[in-house]
Image 1 (cartoon, helix red, strand yellow):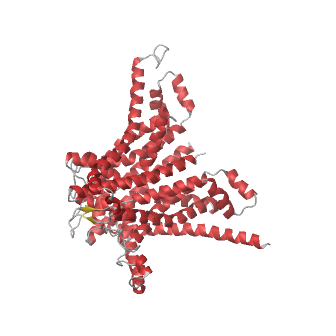
Image 2: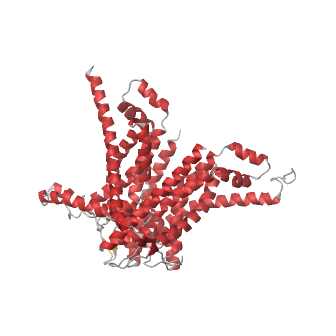
Image 3: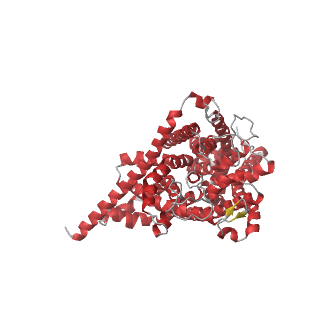
Length: 315
Length: 280
């Protein structure tokens, strides 16, 4: 048994053990930092030939042509931003509604199972959403929305500019819908956690002043965690921007700038997923990796803002 | 009743109704997806799914090569992620504290937690596939490990921080070193929580497709050699779903059903385990 003489402080074996264990833990933590740094460095190195060849024109031209070896990223960048923000616009009101309903209005006996179901649905792999989009939603959309609409669109009208396109259901808009369905349970689950963190006194004080439920939610509870709300919005956006599989199935994978909401397009992630293993030349591969760097910078900025806002919410 | 209070009441009723409607719409959409998955996937379920490899179009077959590949790569990826993640989580909770470096690690870990998985695929391609001139199951496993590690770090740190300080003091008072206290007392107390974190991470990576596309690539045969390309369920589903053959599409639906069911079951087990711990 340990006497004073061989306690941890004096026994050399224990000192070594302590030192090694601590070093192992520290290296593991450092490995995480190195991983993130490695992502940036490898994408920058791999994409460098593309930046060198095209310069700033890489970001502002939309021609993406492996035959002539000309690559411009404007198409996928615009596609990524449009689908991401459209998906967010569709998912945000629903996710807020679900979270508010579950935390404020729903009977507790019903709220708990629904909340668990929502959290479980947030874990469903995105490829499942993608397949559903390709085989179920896109054909439905083509037959019941695009086909009837096409009859009424006149060439060159403003409506045709927004809603024209090949009526096959694979377009920017349907991809955004699938993205919205995918980020919806995730955002609802995080929103719910956020609203549950509002102290009971705050809620009671609002009702004590005679507020209706609507007033308590809109003027007290949501403003109380407003930075967190913006944080969750950013998290959802980050997911939508970087999502690959749910989009690749259904966006139509067309190069260049999309002509309308109902036109085939591409995102950064879908372009990389489709072309990387079949990239023909060195410049093609480099351009795809450069696209990856652009995506990294966009999502890193969005996610970093999200985390800062959410961290500041922990009272 | 004044007009003003009537208006407040109506606004409130409309608001409550709108949130209920939002919940209904969201649940309906998600149940619709699950229903398509079950109705289209269940038809293809049979013993041959697990006993035969993927077929050529038009002939019968299963998904054995993909299922085995997924299990191997997810298993190896999780092994790496558990070692690195538990150690890093331990450092954050026990040694790092609120130091500037620890805060930076924590922040970047949170960012990695939701970083686009396709970029991890590109990174591992540059790291392991390009230098060694070949796609391999090792590369696939490493890519999956990068995705699982942040989850393990997060849950490990959270659960270790919950362990009472008195436990640490009691161990040290007996003359044990800090390292020994962590390994024999703190880790043991947090075991169930760490297992839950591992299960959640496993559920997450088992459905990942994008990081495997340029690392393990895929393989139409059953392959147990880790230095060679290996099939995985998600990549095989991707290939089959986009094919023009009806029987391949059927296999894709069945595979998607298998993955979704596996992910759901793992998540539920993890949750039950976590609840057991919090009740103790």
